[in-house]
Length: 120
Image 1 (tube, rainbow, N blue to C red):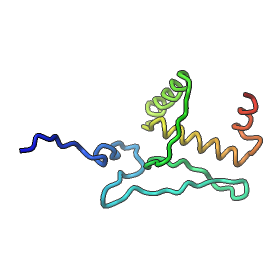
Image 2 (image 1 turned 45 degrees about the vertical axis):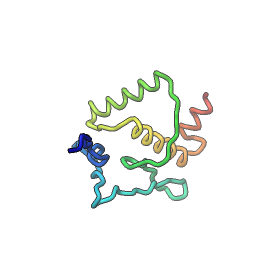
Image 3 (image 1 turned 180 degrees about the vertical axis):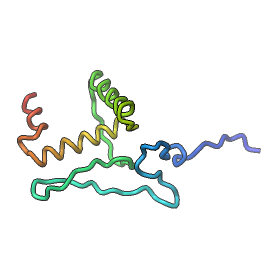
Image 4 (image 1 turned 90 degrees about the vertical axis):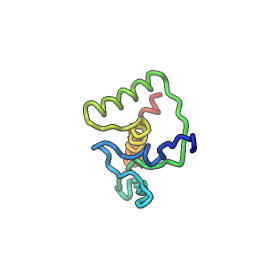
Protein backbone atom coordinates (compact mmCIF):
# COMPACT_ATOMS: atom_id res chain seq x y z
CA UNK A 1 0.00 0.00 0.00
CA UNK A 2 1.50 3.28 -1.13
CA UNK A 3 1.40 6.29 1.16
CA UNK A 4 1.86 8.71 -1.72
CA UNK A 5 -0.83 11.27 -2.32
CA UNK A 6 -2.24 11.51 -5.84
CA UNK A 7 -2.47 15.13 -6.98
CA UNK A 8 -4.40 16.50 -9.95
CA UNK A 9 -2.45 17.18 -13.13
CA UNK A 10 -2.07 20.50 -14.92
CA UNK A 11 -5.03 19.75 -17.21
CA UNK A 12 -7.36 19.47 -14.23
CA UNK A 13 -5.94 22.52 -12.49
CA UNK A 14 -5.93 24.86 -15.48
CA UNK A 15 -9.11 23.88 -17.28
CA UNK A 16 -11.77 26.39 -18.34
CA UNK A 17 -14.39 26.60 -15.60
CA UNK A 18 -16.45 29.75 -16.15
CA UNK A 19 -19.16 30.74 -18.57
CA UNK A 20 -16.93 33.58 -19.72
CA UNK A 21 -14.20 31.34 -21.09
CA UNK A 22 -13.86 31.60 -24.85
CA UNK A 23 -11.58 28.67 -25.61
CA UNK A 24 -11.89 25.06 -24.42
CA UNK A 25 -9.18 23.67 -22.19
CA UNK A 26 -6.59 21.52 -23.89
CA UNK A 27 -7.00 17.77 -23.50
CA UNK A 28 -5.03 14.83 -24.79
CA UNK A 29 -7.56 14.40 -27.59
CA UNK A 30 -7.66 18.07 -28.57
CA UNK A 31 -4.45 20.08 -28.24
CA UNK A 32 -4.58 23.74 -27.28
CA UNK A 33 -5.52 25.94 -30.21
CA UNK A 34 -2.63 27.78 -31.79
CA UNK A 35 -3.51 31.29 -32.88
CA UNK A 36 -1.29 33.43 -35.03
CA UNK A 37 -0.68 36.99 -33.95
CA UNK A 38 -2.24 39.23 -36.55
CA UNK A 39 -0.30 42.41 -37.04
CA UNK A 40 -1.27 45.63 -38.65
CA UNK A 41 0.57 48.09 -40.79
CA UNK A 42 -0.58 51.21 -42.57
CA UNK A 43 -0.19 49.36 -45.89
CA UNK A 44 -2.31 46.33 -45.01
CA UNK A 45 -4.90 47.86 -42.67
CA UNK A 46 -5.11 44.57 -40.72
CA UNK A 47 -5.84 44.23 -37.03
CA UNK A 48 -3.48 43.39 -34.17
CA UNK A 49 -4.84 40.92 -31.64
CA UNK A 50 -3.26 39.85 -28.34
CA UNK A 51 -2.34 36.22 -27.85
CA UNK A 52 -5.11 35.59 -25.32
CA UNK A 53 -5.46 32.36 -23.34
CA UNK A 54 -2.66 30.12 -24.45
CA UNK A 55 0.64 28.90 -23.09
CA UNK A 56 3.24 31.62 -23.43
CA UNK A 57 6.82 30.55 -23.92
CA UNK A 58 8.38 34.02 -23.80
CA UNK A 59 8.68 36.05 -20.63
CA UNK A 60 9.70 39.57 -19.70
CA UNK A 61 9.91 41.24 -16.32
CA UNK A 62 8.32 44.64 -15.94
CA UNK A 63 8.75 46.66 -12.79
CA UNK A 64 5.83 48.86 -11.78
CA UNK A 65 5.23 51.29 -8.97
CA UNK A 66 2.95 50.29 -6.09
CA UNK A 67 0.28 52.64 -7.43
CA UNK A 68 0.50 51.15 -10.95
CA UNK A 69 0.04 47.69 -9.46
CA UNK A 70 -2.99 48.88 -7.50
CA UNK A 71 -4.39 50.47 -10.68
CA UNK A 72 -3.88 47.24 -12.62
CA UNK A 73 -5.55 45.19 -9.91
CA UNK A 74 -8.41 47.70 -9.71
CA UNK A 75 -8.88 47.41 -13.48
CA UNK A 76 -8.94 43.60 -13.17
CA UNK A 77 -11.58 43.76 -10.45
CA UNK A 78 -13.64 46.30 -12.43
CA UNK A 79 -13.57 44.03 -15.47
CA UNK A 80 -14.85 41.17 -13.31
CA UNK A 81 -17.44 43.08 -11.28
CA UNK A 82 -18.85 45.47 -13.88
CA UNK A 83 -18.31 43.55 -17.12
CA UNK A 84 -18.29 39.88 -16.12
CA UNK A 85 -14.77 39.34 -17.52
CA UNK A 86 -12.60 37.14 -15.33
CA UNK A 87 -9.15 37.90 -16.69
CA UNK A 88 -5.74 37.94 -15.08
CA UNK A 89 -3.29 40.84 -15.00
CA UNK A 90 -1.15 39.32 -17.75
CA UNK A 91 -4.14 39.23 -20.09
CA UNK A 92 -4.88 42.89 -19.40
CA UNK A 93 -1.25 43.80 -20.11
CA UNK A 94 -1.24 41.79 -23.37
CA UNK A 95 -4.49 43.49 -24.49
CA UNK A 96 -3.09 46.93 -23.66
CA UNK A 97 0.14 46.13 -25.49
CA UNK A 98 -1.78 45.05 -28.60
CA UNK A 99 -3.85 48.25 -28.55
CA UNK A 100 -0.83 50.54 -28.13
CA UNK A 101 1.21 48.79 -30.83
CA UNK A 102 -1.72 48.82 -33.28
CA UNK A 103 -2.14 52.55 -32.62
CA UNK A 104 1.59 53.12 -33.18
CA UNK A 105 1.52 51.21 -36.46
CA UNK A 106 -1.61 53.01 -37.67
CA UNK A 107 -0.73 56.56 -36.59
CA UNK A 108 3.06 56.59 -36.33
CA UNK A 109 4.22 59.89 -34.86
CA UNK A 110 0.65 60.85 -33.96
CA UNK A 111 0.09 57.71 -31.87
CA UNK A 112 -0.66 58.01 -28.18
CA UNK A 113 2.55 56.11 -27.36
CA UNK A 114 4.79 58.56 -29.23
CA UNK A 115 2.96 61.56 -27.73
CA UNK A 116 3.20 60.21 -24.17
CA UNK A 117 6.86 59.23 -24.51
CA UNK A 118 7.72 62.67 -25.92
CA UNK A 119 5.94 64.35 -22.99
CA UNK A 120 8.00 62.41 -20.45
